[in-house]
Amino acid sequence: MIPTVVWEDGVVVMIDQRRLPNEEIFVRCRDHHEVAAAITDMVIRGAPAIGVAAAFGLALGVRNSTSEGGALREQWDDVCAVLAGTRPTAVNLFWAIERMRRRFDTLAGEGGDALRRALLDEALAIQTEDVESCQRMGDLGAALLPDRARVLTHCNAGALATAGYGTALGVVRSAARMGKLDHVLADETRPFLQGARLTAWELQRDGIPVTVITDSMAGHLMARGEVNAVVVGSDRIVANGDVANKIGTYTVAVLAKEHGLPFYVAAPVSTFDLVTKTGDEIPIEERSAEEVTHVAGHQVTPDGVPVRHPAFDVTPHRLVTAIVCERGIARPPYTESLRDLAGRAR
Ligand code: MRU
Image 1 (tube, rainbow, N blue to C red):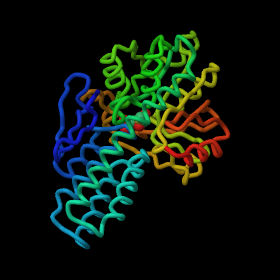
Image 2: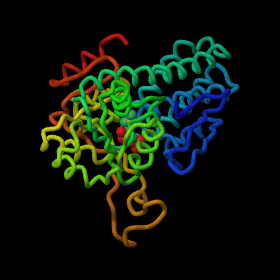
Image 3: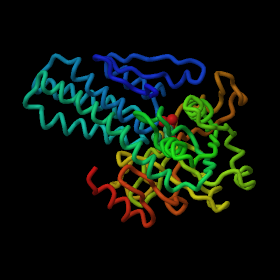
């Protein structure tokens, strides 16, 4: 398995996704500030992976503290705030912090080693459950695909974006295992190139046929019949079924509609934010302008010309054919189907 994020005896180890595909280098985080920096700086990215890393960061924060009682709680609140301030759009981050907070609250009275062990166990459970969820949604999603599927995907919603297996690429992996997959077309995904660098790297590593295209080629290839399904991941799915995902996903959904292609979203229940009613209310992260002005360290725009750099967009629910999660498949009307799946037992 690709070691996206691993707990190694008090150290959180992550493969540095900024260096892929050229170098396989590991970053070792020894305190929660280092974990937070790794999330902010994109060492680790992808909504479920961010949640798992944050959970390990919280476990680390408590493990490194020698305080007890009220002083420990104060530090805990501070650790939670540091991790919550890393990235705003992926709701899995806040879901993981909330889950760890509940664990802390039930055990705060005990303090000491029992609390520290319980928080680490909770983080490990979040990691294990994420892999299991991906495998389940992968199998459910693959069943939706046509035979000889030619799947277009955007960004990286793979093993690198989760604790393992992937969401959209989990569907692809299951389809390959079932003998249903013909080919994957990976949008390069400007500005950060998660498709060209990460999706291509991990699918090639697994022997799954993948071809990288520039984002601008998707419509042309759809018009020529080279795609028969689109599968993407998500950073936040709100109550009405609107879906936030990497910038450019909305464009792909519009193209899919024009060409009569199914547009599937694969994401675990930890990506559901059913408190938020519509996509208009989703906070959209703006990263550094340099992600747009520069490619691989080289400036490609003239000095002084402004650029726009939203990192995510929102695909309206009317363009989404189905949402696949580990508990089943949601179809319109999403207000009901998402609520129903969220309410089901694991
Ligand atoms: O900015 P990133 O690389 O964290 O954005 C990642 C995405 O948009 C993914 O598609 C999404 O998190 C789903 S990951 C299973």
